[in-house]
Length: 220
Image (cartoon, rainbow, N blue to C red; front, side, top):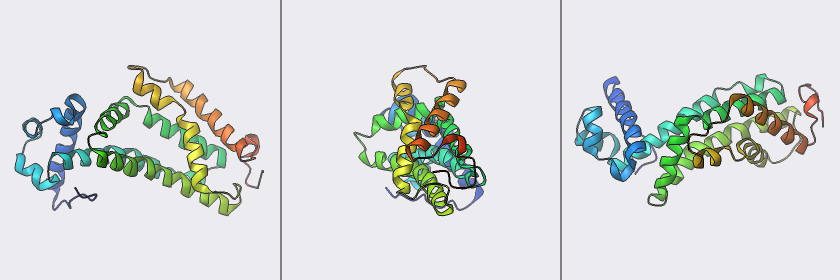
């Protein structure tokens, strides 16, 4: 399978492709990859087996397209955040709340359960999920830290490591808890308090006083 999506030649082809992905995503979540047949997909999405072969190569190629579509929805939201226009602490809180709201949504949890259940049989899918989701999000916040270091608003250090630490504090055990506690959802107020606590702990770890982090001058 190729890591690149086949080019859509026209609007009709793009629409058909999107329909196939939307239908396949729900069927995969309900029946798993092995339990979902091409006939089930075409019965709901239209088209034929040939359509799937032409657009995705095979069912595994369609599953990969589903993964990229779902992770792309999350990373596109994160990429659109105007973090550099905000004070440091506000930017980190905004990033954290946006990320955690997306990661703890019921649909995201459904998709994560699906992808992780298939990784042992399809290791390549795990790589696709990791690189098209986690690593893209990591690059976004890494780039932000690099910029803040250049501007003198964050201590000079390894921006990639800072991104790892920050993401780890944000996620804590929320994703694991939701993956294992069926029907458990964090309340918005609890998520908000968690993100603020994580941001302030992160800043203190880098020698920054959270109460002074909104200043434009160096505060460490």
